[in-house]
Image (cartoon, rainbow, N blue to C red; front, side, top):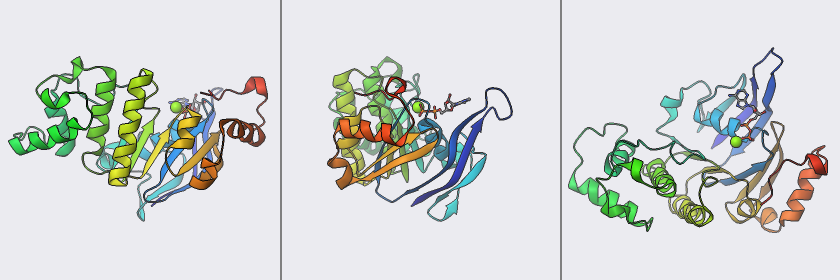
Length: 261
Ligand SMILES: Nc1ncnc2c1ncn2[C@@H]1O[C@H](COP(=O)(O)OP(=O)(O)O)[C@@H](O)[C@H]1O
Ligand SMILES: [Mg+2]
């Protein structure tokens, strides 16, 4: 279980550019939760995930993971327990290393220089085969030559090859073409379900947020303004979600910056 307590993040405090990105936010993430997170641009979604991964340290508040306060742990200290994927498919892999070296890096806590054995290779092949992208036959290929979709799929495997305590997905399919995005989303669902991984996924696609996972959270101005369970969200239509967004914010129609897909 992960508890976020009274978390506040202020960027550029005391300057004209001061921005409260997270505003006294509270959230309990239960083991096995698959949370889809939506909200207007700039509502604090990425900042929340960055605080969880340790990329950003909040001004106030605490993050408790399985009873341990991890608020001040560095990103490096949490990396083995928390996976983090970004919109940029180039962000999660080392382009000048081969597919098998990237996978070994993820599977062996960074000690990839130790010899990659044949049993490692067959394990990697088995994982890659599930992608249906013919990567299982290209273990010695440098990752830099792969397409964005292939790299994002590989990044997903790398982040889940050892089951993380928490998987953070920050619009990880938004930069892919629709067909590839669907494929990576399907792979995400299968991987998360198979290993029962606790996961928070930011998406701009409201239908995806309704269809996937067991919980839907809507953010606005650094706060959670809606937290629906599986039954509640599955009854929801996109129009109703949009109405709830307007009801829970002061947003006027023409100021509705939520990207609705
Ligand atoms: N590193 C940063 N420096 C200054 N302001 C930032 C930084 N990161 C985010 N912000 C600001 O914090 C707010 C929340 O941003 P973000 O968490 O990226 O929103 P979202 O992911 O919901 O679009 C925005 O106003 C954004 O401009
Ligand atoms: Mg964002």
